[in-house]
Length: 329
Length: 250
Image 1 (cartoon, each protein chain N blue to C red):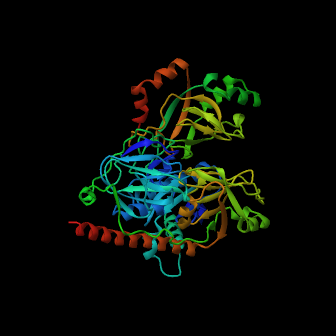
Image 2: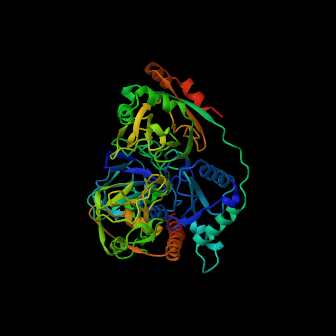
Image 3: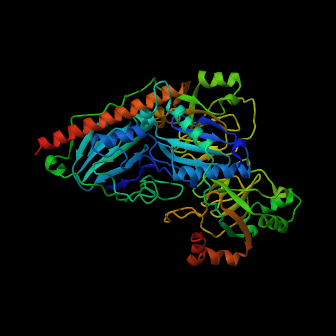
C-alpha cells in the first residue's frame, strides 16, 4: 500500500506495548481500542493486528494488490476511486484502487485494518509507533508521502472481485454499542479526589468542560475554571494510566491518553473507566465532556460486557466470512 | 526492611490498574522495598498481571480484569480480589533477591555550551561553576525509578548546597543533557521539552531501540559522574567501542 499524499498524523498502531513501563517506555497503541479491535475482527483478523490510525485530514492510499479491509472508528467519508464506501463493513478492494477520506462526518480517529495485517517489524513485541523514541510501527514515524507498507494476502479476493474495483460485503458491526449520551464520561474517583474542595467536587461533576486544542495522543487539556484544592502537598512521582484525570498546578485538568508518560506527579482526581476511553478518543478540540462519578463494580461490569461483545463479534464475523468465501468457490 | 514496620496503602488507579503506596516520600529504604517487590513480581507475577511499574515509593500493577473475572466470587470486585492478593503477598517477607551492585561511571562535559543553566545555578547558590561541578561529581546517586521518557532515570540525592527547583516552563533540551530538579538529578536520553536545570551533557547513549534491553539504566543502579573535556565528549560519542563497554557492564 502506497501513500499518495500524507495526512496530518497517521501512524501504525496495535493495542499497545506492555511490559516496559518500568524502563520509562509507555504502552502507546491505538487511542480507540474498541474501534481498532472492531476493524480487525470484521475481516477475521486477530484483535491485536497492526492497524493504521488516521486523523483528519487523512492520507490518500493506493492499494498495490487486492485487499480485504475494514474501516472503523471515526467516519471521514471514505471513498474508493471516488465512490463512497461505508465504515464498519468489510470491503474487498482491487489493485491500483485509491482510498481517500473527504470530511469529518463524526469522530476524531479512524482505523484501517487489512486482511492478513500490515507487515511492520515488531519493536518490543508491538507494532505501535513510538513517535518520541522514533521507533516501532513504520520506521518510527507518522506515514509520509511515498511510503509503502506491505500487507498480507487473502487468496480469494482477486477471484471474487474479477474486474470490479471494490465490493462491500453485506454485514456490518454495530458501533453504537454501549454508547451513553454524547459527552457523558464515567469516571472513578482518583487517589487525590479528596484534595478537591466540596465546591470543586461539585463543579467537577456538574459542569461540562470543553476540550482545548492543546490536545493530542498524549492527553487532552480541558478549559475548566481552576478547581481549588484543600492541600498542595507535593506528590512524589507515581503511576498514572490511560484515562487518568490530573489536576495541573494552575487548577486546569488534563486527561491522559494513549501516549501518556508512565508516571506523574500531579494530583489524580479521577480515572475515566476503560469502556469510555474509546468515546474520549473519538472526541476532539471544541467537544464537551461531562464527567459522572461511578463505582468500581459498574466500571468492571461494563468493561467485561464490552469485551464479551467483541468476542461475539469475532465469532460472528469469522462465521460470516467463511460462509461468504465458501459460497464463492 | 523489617516487615513489622512496613506500612502501605493500596488504591485503584481506574478499573484495571492498582497501586501499592509505601509512603509519599523519596527515601532509599522505601525505594529498596519497591525494588524488591518489583523484582519478585517480575519473577512470579500475581494472576492476571500485565505489568508492574515501580516508582519512588510505589508500585503500580496493570491487570487483565476480564481474565480475572472468573476467579472472583460474586459480590466482590476484581479490584478487591487483586487488593487481597497483593496484601497476602506483602505479608510474606520478600525473597532475598540478588542485590543490584551495578555502578556506572558516567562521563559528563560541564562546558558552558553544554550546560545552559550551570551559571544560573551557581550564582543563585553563591557557588562557583567549579564548585557546582565538584559537588555534582562527588556524589553517588541511586536510580530510584525510570519514567518520563524511555530510559530517563530519576536519581538522587544531590548535595543540599545545589538544590534548585525546576523551571516554571519547559524548554527544549538536547539529548544527553544532565539536569537537576529539587534533590533529583537525571539525564535526558532523548531530546525533549523539559524543565530540569541543565548542568552538563553526557556523550553516552542511554537509550538504544536496537538493543534487547533498550535502556542503559535500570532501577537500583548506582551512578557516579566524572568531568570530561569537549574533545573527550566527541571521542566517546563517536566510539562504538567505548559506548558498548557501558552497555555490556554487568
